[in-house]
Amino acid sequence: MPVIIVGGILSGQFTPTEAAAIACAYAFIVGFFIYKKLTVKDLIDSLKEGAITSAAILLIIAAAKLFGLMMSIEALPQQIAEVFMSITTNKYVFLSWWRS
Image (cartoon, rainbow, N blue to C red; front, side):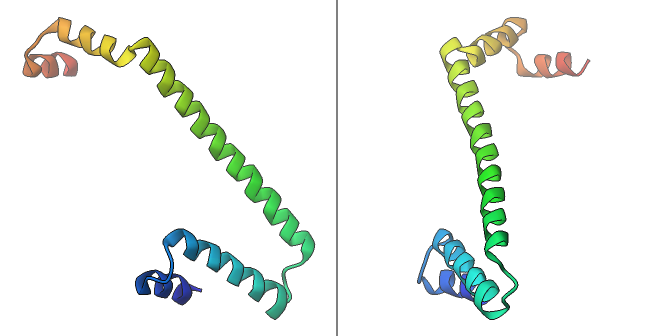
């Protein structure tokens, strides 16, 4: 499988995303038909676990997007910068104040 992935990418036959898909198809074929260790139940369990993991990651991404949107709407980064700049305009004084 590493030869298929690295060789395919380096030869320009496919992109890394396509290499991952081809590696998954290769693993399925080898596990299901050659070694006969992969069963339909195992495949369904694997797909369920992948769906749950993908849903969790997408939920985190959606929450981060919403957080960034709210920070932009409220102009929170600009307000924080104004507070820090109201302390002093000299960056060295600010850094020494911050450390104390």
